[in-house]
Picture 1 (spheres, one colour):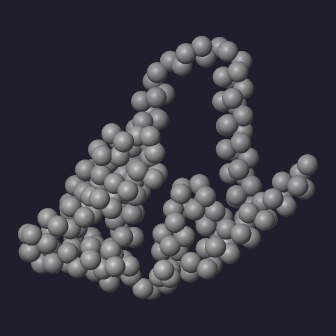
Picture 2 (spheres, one colour; picture 1 turned 45 degrees about the vertical axis):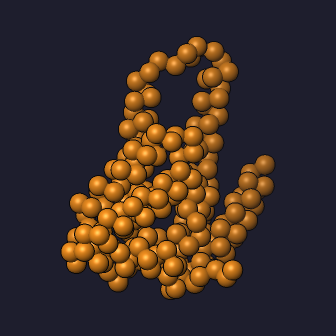
Picture 3 (spheres, rainbow, N blue to C red; picture 1 turned 90 degrees about the vertical axis):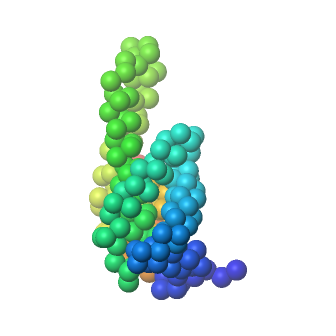
Length: 189
């Protein structure tokens, strides 16, 4: 099986796109099929990113379908459908994570005075700050592929579509960026 180039659409993309366009033209059966197939696609897409939260995944799939239905007029038919779908899904997922973090912040942690928990929180916070600082030193062509593929969990193809880079450039950016980060870490020791 060969990997499709960024300009060649996958069979699933073509099928979803055809059903969606027919649905926009008034074909109710095609639109219903589009929503059913899109729900399966979104469920898999979100489950990979929200592992261990199956109830949230299902709720998010429904929210995404509703948002896509309400925003269907914003889709540009000459653009890849999955890029539009994934962008909406990512925004909905970020909204969920923010809301969840806000709710979690309202709960009192158990035994929060234990030094183990305080050190762990400080170390995680320090690590995030250090990583953000290191990433900020990289040029966009290296930083963005690392952020999207390694931190956000997007595929190389999704990152390429999102950044406008080729898949090869994304892979090279990740490789060179990680190499540069490793060098910076060695220099600070």
